[in-house]
Image (cartoon, helix red, strand yellow):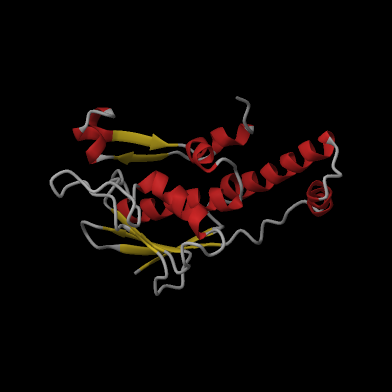
Length: 200
């Protein structure tokens, strides 16, 4: 499987998962998530998937500082409805990392390790997402805005050709290369400037 080389440059998210520890899945429950992991789950790499990954990284850093974030102990809220725009895509990426789900997640073992009811939509917030530690109730608002990172001017024409089934294989390949270059600029070169964190 050949992937864009910058995938390996994206920061890794290190966590501890108490459920995985109890079930003997990962030694000491320690688990890491790479950008490639969420790309595989989403089926593609784009500014939305990359943004959701970076939102998670920065929010968890702000909430846990030098500690390992605890998977299954993070509550996440969105202002959008689940079926609005890309809210579902962002939610799925964050679910993959944090374990938080709305109602479909793991119900727990004897009332421990539950993952359901930790993700909320239609919330009264103004940020891109709000992350909250279940144990301390500490929260941060995360704002993601990649609009300053402009796409190559060629992309609009290439996208039009692809949509009209008029693009050659070379043009399709060029579009993909330019698309991923913008993703790289967002989540590698500008990983700190596209995200803003506010403590609640």
